[in-house]
Image (tube, rainbow over all chains, first blue to last red; front, side, top):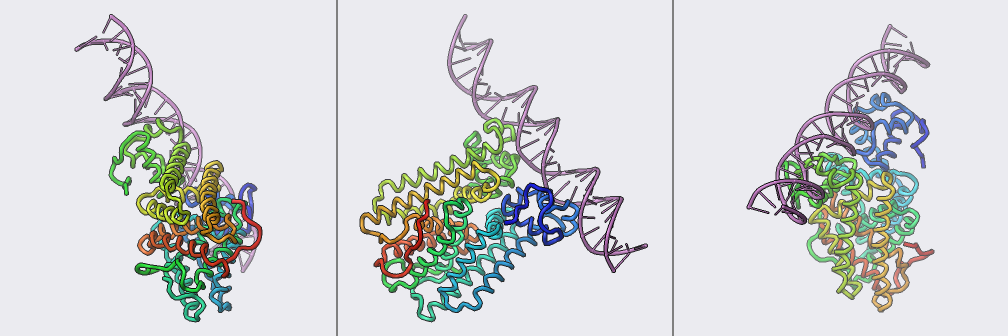
Length: 217
Length: 217
DNA sequence: GGCTCAATACTGAACGTTCAGTATGGCGAG
DNA sequence: CTCGCCATACTGAACGTTCAGTATTGAGCC
């Protein structure tokens, strides 16, 4: 909930303070739309401080992205570690994404830069691509666990199912950012998980079965 | 599949040619990341030509967004008009989104600007917000139709269901843009619809039911 | 058919501003 | 005195925007 704009000095200074401010600015205005001056002003320092801690604007972005991706993945792994029910793990992930998206700009930062970096920063884009791969592979793992324990039906393509689960999360976040007052993110994601689980635990007869080759995600 | 970059002159000139090029550039590099020079060069004209047809950069963006939103909505309405099965209509929408996302940058343009405009352009952001509202309300309408005809179960919150359907589309598109080689968008969206329909047509007993107040979407 | 006039669709150069990045200087702590 | 940490003041390039001028077209008149 930190509000960096306007007033001259905000947040704690130093490298981490600058990075936190940078993340917030990048999340709001994108990389190209955020000037070094803006970050510095919002962080309550001058450009000198910024260029002392970071070689250039791009390196600041890289550091921020890396920090955010690692922190989020650690956060997820930490919370899931002692949940051994796959269904409950999925529920927990959805809850975490919802909370994360609502309480600060951290997930929006990732989303914004993911979209912007696509054609403007090849190596950063690769970073995001790999992050999504890890995220999907993590879900695939959970789903396979559920299958092996006989909790989930076995006639679904795990790769595609993982893509779909992640889609639901990302898409809900986008809609929430566009209209926070109209979209109840927590409820939407909760329903998403329940719908997904209902589909996974259905008697394995009705429609919705998967055809064609599997995706390698 | 138009490739505006590099070579000096491309596409047909004139207002519509400039706008088509602008859409492609904005889709790739975002608004802030696209310079007037870049659009002009890619369109094979000079900056003067651009400022002859559009008051300024922002107005060009507005015109482009408006054109794209209207064209997409007309396209959807046109194709759905003579489909009276709600389930088939949902399938058709998913197919159209997949094709649109794969064959040109038009849907990516909307997605990119949706994310970028959030904190940088209030009125443009409102445009996108309303677009999403219309899109959801359209789906809600289809779902209600399905309920009234006894095709879909009646214990689901239509508003939330619509959000979820749209989430699946948006999220799949994002993942596809990030990794077109790994994500089979057509298959992913096809499975998304089938999963959604399976959940809607399930015997109305199993899990996945909706609690709490409805969203007003 | 030839001539005028005005409108359309641009070009190319310039202007003022903003940007990322740099050079230098200062200051408090050890 | 020096070193970590930062402020101030600056530079050159890139940016959005303006503008004077030009090529082309078509309608209206003699």
